[in-house]
Amino acid sequence: TLTYVEPLRDIFASLFFASIGMLIDPVFLWKNLELILGLVALAFIGKFLIITPLVKLFRYPLKTALIAGFGLAQIGEFSFVLASEGQALGLVSRQIYLLILGTTAVTLVLTPFVLRLVPIVFDWLESMPWLKPYLSGEGKPLEVAEELPIKDHIVVCGYGRVGKNLVKLLQQHDLPVVVIDQSERRIQELREAGVPYVYGNCVSFYVLETAMVSQAKGMAIALPDPMSIRLCLKRALELSPDLDVVVRATSDKNIEVLYQLGAREVVQPEFEASLEMATYILNAVGFSSVVVQREMQEIRNRHYLDLRPEQSASQVSRHLRQATQDLNNRWYALPETSPLIGMTLEEADMRYLTGVSLMAIRRANGEEIDYPDASTKLEKGDRLLVVGSDEEFAALEEFAVGRAAVPGDNSACQWVIVNADCPVLGKTLADLHIREKYGVQVQSMRRDGKFIRFPNGKMELQAQDQLLLCGSLTSLNQIEQLFAPLNSQLLSVPVVKASEAEALKDYLPMDSVID
Image (cartoon, rainbow, N blue to C red; front, side):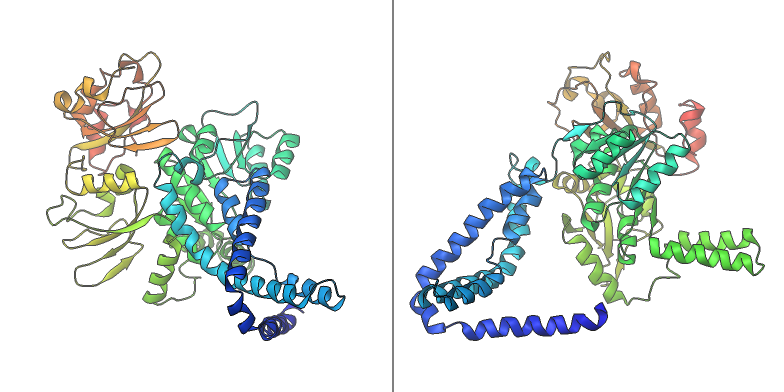
């Protein structure tokens, strides 16, 4: 029925606005231009000042409230109907009627342009340090469950149908779970079910920190909004670069974007339904279940490419631009003398060491590689489309020119935690002379939900600070003396090449070596 009705709806909507246009008197608009512009400003400002606080009152983030305020600031088209009836009943004079028509029409015309300007305004406001925390979704949790797992738990973002079923299955296997959601109704369901929760926005660093993402064993993102999914994934991996994250893709077009941002596994519900149905039918007609399962897993490993519709290079490129336009992105020209030239993306490990996500490469000959894989080599003259924060872009520039630690044959990086009883507590990084004495570089720091690339030497170390130390394996072993109480607190040692595993065994306990 909807298929038949929708074209008629579009026709009547067009007819409605065309008829409104015919009612407007251009001469009247021109003669009363100043008055109408004043009424337009009054309507925009007045409705914005009413709607924004109301949305904020319902505990939505400030950015959401502002977008709602701008988006609903125009006068609705129903006012045409009311004004017509008012004139027919003698309640509204002809002049007032024409003023209402003119003002409403102008607000409707201006609204799309205002909404296009909103992201530019937000970018400008977020450049101000004192405003950025309020606009970037970094709100504090509104409420936290009393008993929250703090280690080796699973974080589930979103408690809709998918999230609810996922939590149920995890609990059946006695796995500790923490759910993040910002819907009061769903939080009430979590309270009644006795499920640990954090009430807040999943894209907030503070909310993710409260859910102890850095200590979690895994994370599942089942949000309905593609933009929130991408931001949540990016920020969770900034807090815990080795976190095992599985993401539900809302459409097949988002699959590669999510993999490129660092998701370990991306699940597309429609494709999964097809695979499960095919598995059942193939098993029913006599195919070996082992062979069928292997084939289905190969399709998953290829990111559902066998099921996705064919797209031209221009279509893929256009979608990539659309997917990254709401993220902070830029094209970065790789310096001609960069030590990264000739390295594969797996060897460079840019996302882990700088935080940026590489989405595309444009070669010097004009060739463009969208969603490059780990085996892609960086070449002289490459321009990189990267997504990240301003701090991460600065880190990439340091990294690309060799001023930051670059993976080599005998180097690695590891995270350490500053405990309350650590002898370096209260000292500045400059006091420790880590680079001069040990040849080890402090590449990054995590503190209070913030990810700081190349921290200033004047920063004093505080309890629970996490430092990313990069250098030779021998130097990293020696520097453990500085962080003596932290021997049991090493978080991870990423091994760039498999051949380094044997070397690592000489310096670290066997259970610390990543296979």
